[in-house]
Length: 186
Length: 272
Image (cartoon, rainbow over the protein chains, first blue to last red):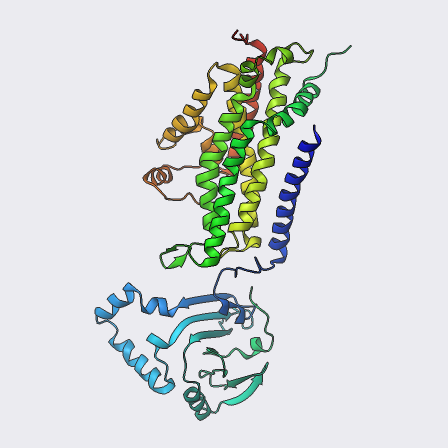
């Protein structure tokens, strides 16, 4: 075997070994795929607790502009739903059709057990919200303001929408234990 | 002086054939064949960075899906059979065409060891070029909306599948090359005529192909890019992975044994 052939074999073996080694480490450790390209899934997933048993995501904007939605609207089946939407908008100022872009939800049944379904959950919505109006509404319902990692966090035990200020995403159902141990879910 | 064993003779032939094969004009063709998918992967990566990747059903095409399509359409259906045909059929034919086979046959080694050594050189040469290319493609394409860690089992399975595929196709066409006078045409008809046709026909005939067993090892879903693919999917009854591995190993060993027998018994007449 010539030196040239030997070098070629070594380089080839190195490429395959490094590739397989990197893949194996990534498989077991799960480090980010690349510094330049984000990995799959919505970025809001990182706000969900790592103990989430069920995770859901909806691109509300995509759904609202979809053909299916237009047909549903034309069919006249949504009059009851519209009443609920109107009531929600009157209270919070949020128009579900236009103001919410994406919703991510996580359910953790491990804390309460799956049998009696006493688990906790979190729902996060990203969009454009009237923070002052929502804060006023929450304060009416006995909410109080905390600071979490430099952000204002409005919480209440009655589980009414609680937006952190300066953020376009807010938890619709605050999951306080998970917020105080903010481990990422992936 | 004791006669060298089959294995030691084959390793000697392997040693000088590998360099010869790797730096031959045929390897330029191999480099192009392997380089094109890598180039395609680079283009995909650039398009992904620029946000120009196509959107299908409202979602951007993901890296793992693209990798699966590349593996199916380029490697499983084209690169692996083509390499098998072009390299496998030429193992003995090149020596006949160059009129150098006499030098090999006048050595005190079993004739079959010439074929075996050359086959091992083909396998090493092709594997050394194909596997790094697949690894590079994987690391270029998978991060586009996918995860290197999650996709790692796919990469491992693909590397194994390609290695097994080139071994099986190479052995079959090495036998064809050792047995027939014009093996290239027969090889192309088998790989792109017989195999493609029989896979579309329901029944047992597809068991007489290499592709039937190789497709069972592909970890990706078959892409539905044409009516032909849809027909293939409709009539697809893939064997279990362990059955495929056993059958491919049996095909490889049987083809090599028959190739060895053909080389031992055939009289090669060199044209003057």
